[in-house]
Image (cartoon, rainbow, N blue to C red):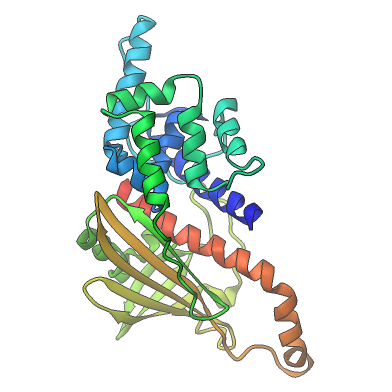
Length: 325
């Protein structure tokens, strides 16, 4: 369990921290970018920071101001080269500084959970003074955040059970109001903004027709089976604060159907966005392959769980990135 928690934390925080680093036009992910990523955490680490005034927007302003002062101390009157927006897709060449790597590694050391609260505690204890200086700019300090973290960690976490073995669910914090998030996830034309496999979506009578991406953003061809290029998209359910989509392959009628459900709830400083995503089994294989399918599914279960988690993380990251800019 701890290994999977560490992998999940490392992947999620690393992606968000790298996205935040691209705003500033730097090529290394450092402590301040980890702090920005933790301010977007939906759990106790993010809540402790936001309750202390460390919101993502305020923290970015503090990071920019600190960088300007560091440059000024060297006699340079200039801002960092970034334009303040996430540069997506992230190009190769981003590395983590040794001290940022140490924070992530130490959070998973013996008797430590390896989760976002553990990373935050390591970040608060990091000796360079970088985080301490940023917190001072934001009107708080390590002691206040530790106290708030202790308080919110005592609250029982909400555990969500997936509706089937091929579904997974998670909640992320997005610094945007519910109506703005729903405007994104409820509009079929905007599905490609957060569903990375889609190039475009066109109206097709009472449903919609999706076209898969066949090349990435730098023109490199992607391997997509011809029978999976077209997607039939149906809005399965929708309301003021929720929407569900079904995505099927009309050229592969035996394939599984994908289902994505999104619900939004207002939270301090933004919204909690819960996404359930996975697959509804299709007709499946025939003959002998059908007979051995239950055994195959049992053997593949750990890999399927990990693949579902990757898909879910990609979706939630896409929703967050589209609204954070």
